[in-house]
Length: 180
Image 1 (tube, one colour):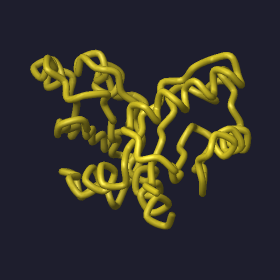
Image 2 (cartoon, one colour):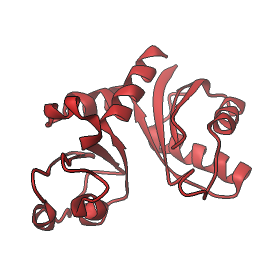
Image 3 (cartoon, one colour):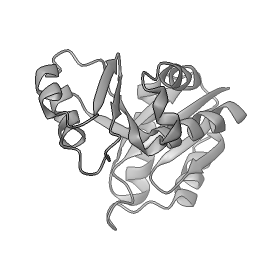
Image 4 (tube, one colour):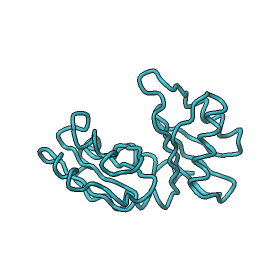
């Protein structure tokens, strides 16, 4: 059985689209997933799947399970252990280890064909920096993520849907997936 990480987008934010992690774990276990574990309340799950299914099919399945149980269907990104490990190993900003909230990894649905890199560069402020590597956009914001214009516009300028997690969360999910 393969280890997977699922990143659910837009749940438990501002009192909307509420999905307690215990409930999500129960849903996934009921669907045959094993060793299901959550991290934080924002839709970070690691699990084993009895099938060797492709990640998009697993994401669609999880989204439908949530829709059937809760009435809304979140976007779900599913990463294999190898994909998550590669994203961590490819980090171009090792200085983020000292301040893990300064680095966010945007996991994209696919490699963007028409990213507006010029506008991404124009939005950079201070020491902000970024790097796009295949389906991962690394955004380093040492001055703070919340106030970053680059962070606010990144998904639109990349031209693809994405979900972002900070460096601490990504590393913790990798540890959890490796422990499965």
